[in-house]
Length: 344
Figure 1 (tube, rainbow, N blue to C red):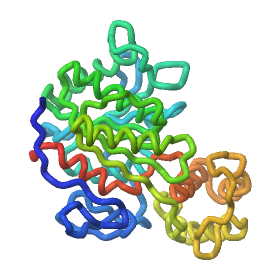
Figure 2 (cartoon, helix red, strand yellow; figure 1 turned 135 degrees about the vertical axis):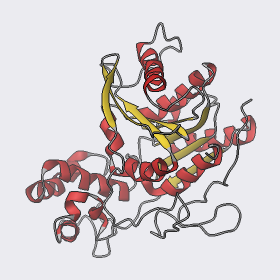
Figure 3 (cartoon, rainbow, N blue to C red; figure 1 turned 180 degrees about the horizontal axis):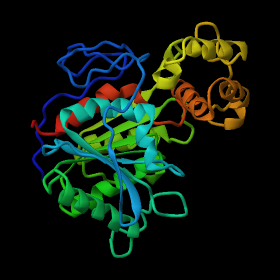
Figure 4 (cartoon, rainbow, N blue to C red; figure 1 turned 90 degrees about the horizontal axis):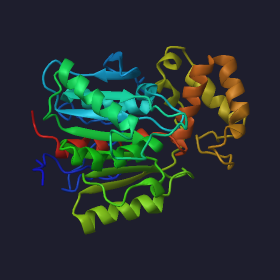
């Protein structure tokens, strides 16, 4: 069994500020900051820009994005995108929000696209000779070891969104079997039916209140099994629906650079009767259905370009706790990683 150095107790549920020791910690919803705490979350109204540029290159003919510090990294953070996505999801506001806490601590990060026409990660075989996707992931690590400060001993953190979360859990057992030092698995809004029966690493389970594609009870059940029956530490946290703050859209840098645009978008949501004047949701449709957002996106697209319209709509869906990578528990996730990554 691997030796795990426990540095910090995992953070409590967002909003409680309890780290399990009775002390108060800042949360992602509070905006409080403690300069000496590398996991302290910046204010929610602050624009989110990924702090590291990263390198785009190809390995075995497929694109990857990677950032590795000059010195040996504290850990290698693998990110797996959701179905029909690409590794560009690592630039998403919520993923960047978390990475901006991790990279100053010396974390390396890597992401790639899946290889299958079926749009989901290939979890069909644990044999690299029969699974080209798995063989390519092994080649990516070999490439990083050969060309960067990543070493054979660098601890690994596996994380993903939706089908990427299922891939991260599946890979945990595969990589452990290969002798790799898997320290943590992090699962964001992933269908619980896809999880393997046993995950051989501490696991952070993040789900959202209104995500109909996530079997929350299944994730909670497996988290309990890990903790009670298998002896693996786990953390299960559910992101609740929130009221929309007038400045929330300022998290999108280009929106924050346009004076009054965030407030204008808020006011339009009120006019469209999707929220009330306090930012609470009024519309009770299935918010994961794009058709129910048409009037909103028409306004967004008329006032900002289509990409920013998509990012602004994504922020709204995160506030409404639907199927998105949600940074609500970013502080707790960062601390959970700290707990199992050795001090440098």
